[in-house]
Image (cartoon, rainbow, N blue to C red):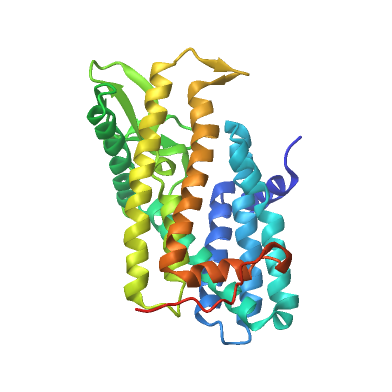
Length: 333
């Protein structure tokens, strides 16, 4: 049985001459733009209505990814993407119907949340949509993992040529791809731009690196959360960025190197139908990454208590515990 929302949007896309992925990107870009405008114009009456539309469109945009994660069998991301549509609809309702009844501090934190989401998603999709930037991040990710494996004495590896996964048309080397390197104007397959990995002997490892291996999603969440703190000086915001972004890159390099080593060393390992790669990539690494992000957030709360207060103010009062979202924490420059 096909997912009805995706089928309906696919039919709409076909009727207006777009692919399903093309329409999804249009929905996402419109949602991001509306949130960014509502964040910048938060003092104007129309901002709430713009934000409501933006939340719903972004929820739909992320929800439409769930079909892909069902196909590759990633349960964590299936749950997260499937929850995006009801979550976006709830935020849209709060913005449109309940915003005026919110406490001033909660309203302030909701505006911060608009900025966080907008300025997390916009940079990521800029990188995705500009092949030069996309490939640069993929190359950095692949060569960082290769260096880490060789530095730790876990094997000798080499990276192959950059490849392009064409939408429904196989894979070609980047040197043979006729697409625009400044703006991505044609849909790609699930792999997008990727780099295959080989042993130094030339034997293929059966692992490739794509943009989603870069940890860019995790980095950009912290970038958006910190940049959206309008009441915090840029001096403190830059310190937060210098702590979080390089640390996430280093941790992600360990993650990628670990997945490669486990998958390559235990090629015949199976558990309940899962290969070592599937287990390490879809389960173990996801849990470890979420835990690392949690620890990173706790570390940043000391430097940026405003970040902590904004998060707490968005929670129902029953879930805030003994911590006060309105505590007068120091915020010296």
